[in-house]
Length: 274
Image 1 (cartoon, helix red, strand yellow):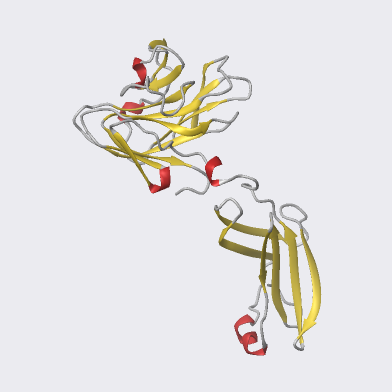
Image 2 (cartoon, rainbow, N blue to C red):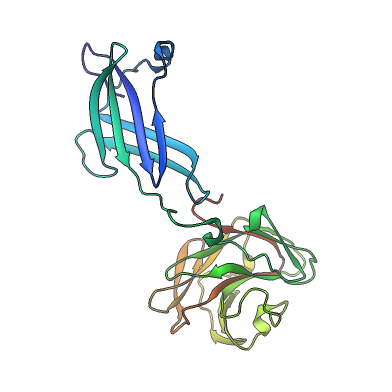
């Protein structure tokens, strides 16, 4: 915290985030030694609030840095007062919780009803293959929202088959008994990306759609799919939109990822999921 000439300031920070109240304060005279101001030659101040639970159970980290006099970013009010014979500054602001109103069940992860060749770990965010020779599709726990990116990171892969990965959407629900070991065998309600081609209901409808072959993925590579609010289907490779792949997609569709070929483990990526 910056100081004025000849004055000493202590710092009190109060943040209100969707019913979460955090206050950093001085408890007693004995604590003052831990709050001695440091010289600040720049014209910037910053604060950080790290690793607290919001109402939805998410861990949240917040960092703010602003040029003095700059009114952009998080709006804070500043108050100067005295406490224990020392001058103090309180910065107070309201921060919106990005997950406000969202419960743990709303967070996108894999549905617990998986096929016989898959199992979930990491609280439902990671899927692993049980039999390396087979495949293993798994659906999301809820339908995708408009413009919501369903993104998966391939964590592990074998070397026996030379191909891996499948991702897309389906109108079928988790636990539906007609879902096979390989999603491309379904003749209804599927839009899937394998390799560089897009398949609809088991038919190759978009040859060489993707600029990157997801069969050649290495651990750490990411692939995703999104249904836009206009009903267009987009696939993403390592965060890059490959363009529209289909149109007139139904509103209620589930994300589907397949541990296809050599893919043996993958994790859904969310804003707070490492």
